Image (cartoon, rainbow, N blue to C red; front, side, top):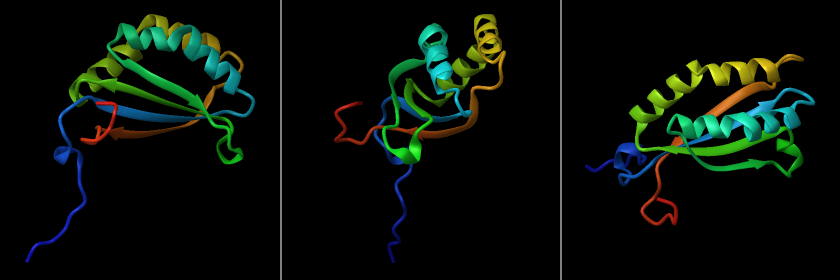
Length: 123
């Protein structure tokens, strides 16, 4: 008897390791969160080997106040090393501290880890 099972990352073609992150901004803080990404975070990501794929804000009412972004790495190990280094970077710590002088910018962070399908234009 053959049983079906859902496809998992191990079954996916080898390629980049993508991460979708969804940040729910604290009330009234989405502009400040976008400014922090624009002015600091994306360059620090590059510095630590985190590839910036894209950044989006919602246009539907259900998701207003959220920042969506996708970054990529060669693999999970590289992802973990990059985030560890990023989190300890004095430039990041200073930017985060300065941007949160009037309160935290993010209420919630959601993550989804992904690999491309064999038919995806993005590999």
